[in-house]
Amino acid sequence: MREELHRFFRAARGAGVRVSPAESIDAMKAVADVGFADRGVLRDTLLLTLAKSQDEKQALGECFDLFFSQPEVKDPAAPEDAEKADRADSDAGETPPGGPGAPSPQLGDLAQMLMSRDRNSIAAAMANAANAASLSDIRYFTQRGIFSTRILEALGIERLRDDLDALTASNPAEAERLAAALEALRENVREVVNQALVLYGREETENLRNEILRNAPLARLERRQVEQMKVLIRAIARRLRERYSKPRKRQRRGHLDTRRTLRRNAAWGGVPFLTSWKRRHRDRPKIVAICDVSGSVAQVSDFFLLLIHSLHEVVDDVRSFAFSGHLIEVSDILDKKSPEAVASAFLTANKLK
Image 1 (cartoon, rainbow, N blue to C red):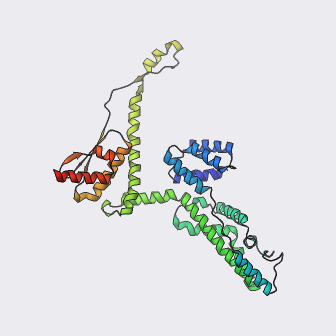
Image 2: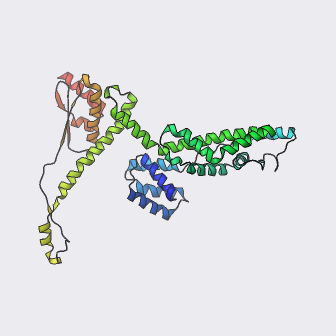
């Protein structure tokens, strides 16, 4: 259970949910009480202990559904194919031991599992092989082939190839069924790897994409990259808000006044039941942003208008100005409209002047 939850926490962080060590410990204690039997209760428990906002709750719910869903194991041989193989065996006078459709006892474990078409056993074997191959370490799409090979090797693909060669010489009909089952197994493994890539590779993929966007010239950004840039800019704005709010909290609280605190608590033998703080009155700081939106810097102005718009979403006391031929305040417009509408309104205002 512990290892499973650690993998889930890693997937949740990749989905954008901030999970601290203390929160993960609380979540593990809660899961120890409710158990894994009821997935609905487990889902609600993790959402209550880890999600801190509506967006995180939605992201965590989607991550949970994907993490605890098993890809459907495809039937390695369709019923009509099995009937054809059985008829071919009957015509050739070859009946495998144990009755029609039963795997030969000389085959390896994986071949017998595939020939018997036991989906539950196949799913369990793939899960064990994925753990043995450390599938949770996948980070990039270029690693899909490597991890698929590792899982197949952990399942016993080498012995299966030997069984397939032996059956090709002794029983071509059974060999055809086993080859079809092997192809279905490869497809199942590819789906498991793709699901793991979505869970564990999302964070690295986004980091790589954000790094490319940070270093890309603004004038050369494509339209699809502009949409991705909006997410990055909002993250920058949230970081600015956090840095801006910390000094404000310290200013409101002030600094501990040791002398006054000791005097106030003389009746209790100096035990500081009541505290006194030194506070200095300071004017509330404001952010003033000025943006050039002239045509010669259109691409760059779009970027900065988007940044200023994001600041208005997360920070109070922001006054924003834009200029091309004239300087005008656009704070009210940014509070109510999109950055594109702001640029259009400003250009119209300058033309009227």
